[in-house]
Image 1 (cartoon, helix red, strand yellow):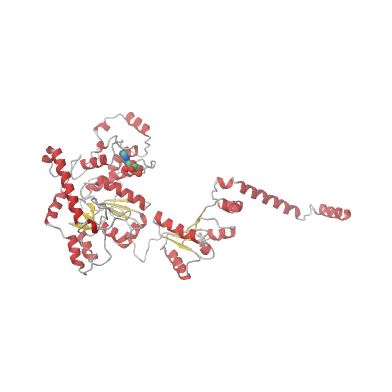
Image 2 (image 1 turned 135 degrees about the vertical axis):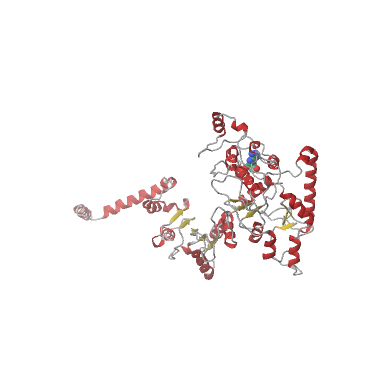
Length: 536
Ligand code: AMP
């Protein structure tokens, strides 16, 4: 059986959409047989219960879950999804050469590297066509036979590589037998700092986790011989289902540190999805999914879905309905999907947004000094953060500007990048944060821009970037902003320009003071005047 990975928007040439769909979702008898065997568990672990979870049963997770932090989503079955909502699918491609190449971030066929449009249901791997599915299954079969030959005893005693129904992390005897001071010494040497109550001891080897053989094999294949320090401490804590807040340098192995507990939990969880990984950027999400797939390879029923902006939404929505175990998402796209479909995440109350009651996040208004800057910055914000962003400037028509303003007030945009056009007058009461990305050329303009927040007695925040281009305003800025209690950067306060301006202003004040006529200096002024007249 094939499960289409993406939805085709275009209709089938002969208009016989249903037969195409039937072709996609129809299972052949051989497939069904293999499906059953796939439900059989794989390798043995440290176990407690011994029942095999039913694929769609609502059996609870055998993991302890003090935080209850992992989520579940109920979704329609793959067949229902196809029949109900998308009756105009193209037939499954027969040959690899008729498939297109994958765009960046799209799934890739495990055989030929083209667009992995379908999921091979027997292995959960991405394939592009019937041809590659056949090749892929042949490769899998050959691999299985090879491993049977190299390990005949295991092949006889464990024909189905049973995976027991539960996994409970227990400290390995090697770790248990270490003295407390040995553990402390180890942590100190590795720079592991821990806070929290009864935090379990770190592992020293991946073997201490009693992972399934397949996972151990995948770790070795990825070159993970020994855990990194963050993995040593995080993995056992994660396997116990505890909440973790972790911090370590870039490139120190944080991704695998959280992925391994997530994978182990999802593996024994019968409901789908079992895990949601939220990341700030699309690039990071793609990277995490790639690593997750590497580690999950060969584990049964472990599908992933990427929910990220910048790629079409329908295929992602469809993929989400295919009993995926792990969701890797950016917040913006996840929110879009929650808005569109009724998603219930178990354990966590997720607001399903009704069109009339949009989740309202106050938009951010960013000011720049030129039209091109507004367009470029808006594009970059959208690309990098996934936030819905738009630019507004004098080159946009009145109608466009009106619509953008309406969208801004109604929460359609999370970021609006503007030139001075929005700087004055308008009551943008929904805006709570103004960013002066480019400092305006005058204090008057600056006051108007920051005045877009905090309207009608509401609190607001303004963040202003300054550099030497606005050095002539340094002292004025400091004078204006300091009384609000804001902390000004030392670079500004220590700037020679600021001190120069301050000194000049003080001299000017003194001069003005001298020029004023008061009771005290009146006689002096008269005498000076008389003296200069008599000299003439
Ligand atoms: P990360 O900090 O998660 O981005 O990981 C940085 C790199 O280290 C990635 O390329 C990982 O594949 C790799 N890596 C993670 N854990 C290990 C490990 N235990 N042994 C070797 N490489 C690892």
